[in-house]
Length: 250
Image 1 (cartoon, helix red, strand yellow):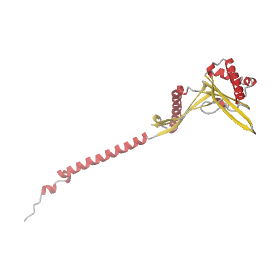
Image 2 (image 1 turned 180 degrees about the vertical axis):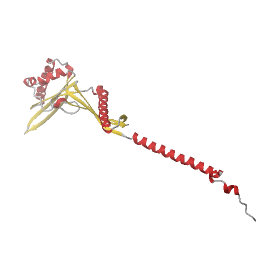
Image 3 (image 1 turned 135 degrees about the horizontal axis):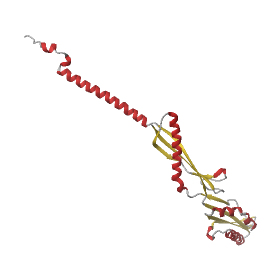
Image 4 (image 1 turned 90 degrees about the vertical axis):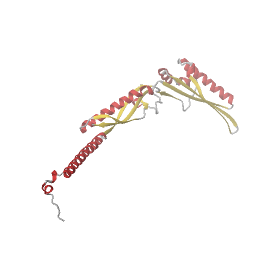
């Protein structure tokens, strides 16, 4: 049996062969797809990396305010061999206190009893009774309250001896009214810090990625003595808030 030799196939260049041409076309398409996919993947990773570029800064906002509520606690007591005498002494002090605040122009309901305590005991067989009374003045008239505190020694001259625990507290209660403006101011301050950072690093500031509002604090202004959260012996307060903001960088 004699083998047949296809002279045409032998002399045809391989790249003109139909099967070879289809293979080359498929390979070319695959290569282009791989190149395009690699580019898109790389570009996507670059964009994702750029999207994650951010800076975290803090913004501060402060505002001076004046307290709008004055609360004055007055504690006093009397001790006597019998309960009736001790109670009578406390009652006289209470009348003196009411008269004192009435003379200063406070309404009758501004001062109210807030606590009373009675203790009876025997000392070497001698009975003794102590009555402790606490009165509280609440007023939104801050100037009048300040005037009353300045004249508190008039109570001493009337025989009322104030005990430890007595004192005036001034409180700022309208914090919710100024919160939105202060948060906006703190955020603006944070953006200014972010823009300075971006300028130094050759970038620009984008939108907010994340933000956290700090706690509002109300303290005495200018280093005056005082407690936390607005209660102190001065009506002049400083409200403060710090926000933490993450800004995207472009």
